[in-house]
Image (cartoon, helix red, strand yellow):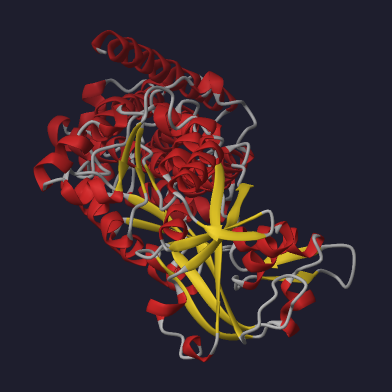
Length: 562
């Protein structure tokens, strides 16, 4: 009887086994559940490739989520497994209770008898026992017949069945899934199980992977249909705190309804699926994720993302990388915007105080299109910050350029850089004995470029110092921007080597602009003295220290406000 059970399960499957590399290994092509049945049947000597020629398939009733079963009509000539004086045998494989409901007879110890109520209760109890262990259970039945079955009429093929038995198999979760679900909870992501599996099976699997930690609330598809929209909304509200919410024996339209209900509550919904029945929910979700290995073409077509490794943990890693990319864009913008303030302040000072601008237009371009570019791009390659998966999702309507970012870039970092550049600019004039009034008096001649050669050289050196001070501050800024709220001390000095490449490039470009005569003529710069270069070394650590102090205050304020 066990061989007949496995033969029926294998013949009523569409997966196949293929030998890999000629010898030494096999792989399943198709549904993994059917693959497990094929392997078991093969080992018992009744695989589809072993007896398939003696039982060719005539007709198939594909699996349907409403019937919860599939059937095949075979021309039978395997008398040692199942003596059959007639020509045809139907094998049915599906949800045990559905197969049992369509059965009138039971094959027990090789003997055929009518199914009694006690037999039915025994099958249900065995099914529940297996399901409670987290096993996936299928029921196998058959019927024999003659020409009346040849037309493949469903009403005939799947009625008056003889129940053969149950097949139970373990579909173990990947070891990393439990940790991934724990990460989701920490990141404010609610994970809900919506499955076509039997309720007890779903609960056991959910407990095994840590999705359920307390009492489970199992909502079956039939029960879901009885819920009004308001009742369903009440069930789903706060579902992120209901670790025991499971939807079992769910049909495609019910899964679609759940997706739409979650969206109606303002959630961003990601749905995973691999079958044709998952396509409506995959298409309706904000993010549809299809399985690349076990998924059907229909599911992959309906989804936005295909998981080539069929691994839930990959989704969590993608979320982490997505958050890191978003953070890195903000770091990039903060770094770029901060240098805008010291670039505009010289012209405001010229208007307000009547002094010459501390920067020329080409020097501003040297910063924006030259020294800033490589460090800014290096920030885009920053690894995820510690704790990135311990904060809630950002609101959908939160702009990338928000008020905190602009205040940090313009009102804090930018102000420090502006002060540094103006101090550097004025220090050159002071070194040559100019008072503030003296500087104001020579401004018209400098602007008209009619001042004497010595004054113009002093002006070139002063603007060069202002330019160098901005670049020095930006060197500190690129390190300060590596963490938006956390301390950069935890980032690792060499965890992003591109930063150092950017800094070296930045310094090299500055040295070229300051000391190479052709570039001096283009950018109107002058060589700096060793003492002037040394004076610039104070600005990078000063800016980093000020930013670290600001972030420390922010972190303490955030902890106090929780």
